[in-house]
Length: 127
Image (cartoon, rainbow, N blue to C red; front, side, top):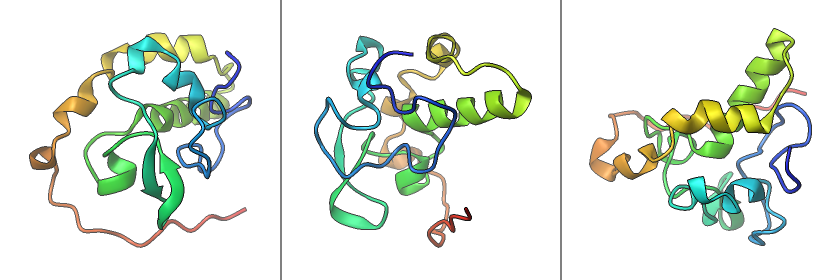
């Protein structure tokens, strides 16, 4: 897995939120430096119930406005968890191959593409 990837183990909590906007240090820096995700992943302020000082990887997604779309770092976390539960090795390179079908779908997640979901309560993290 490349240096600067969002996680150096299997999936972890809040891998799609960070309190730094430094592209070299943010959890999803591996996506920022990958040309395949240049129009999909960025640094957007406002997440985890914070308006300022907390950052997310996409303008809109399931994690932000209940769009029918998960951003790339969220897809990576889901992939890691599936690999962990199945006993298979987590590989960022395999994920990138697998994720090719999802790239570019963020552009089709315009405000009119959203389903009529009602906002829910914040997640409860059980450790």
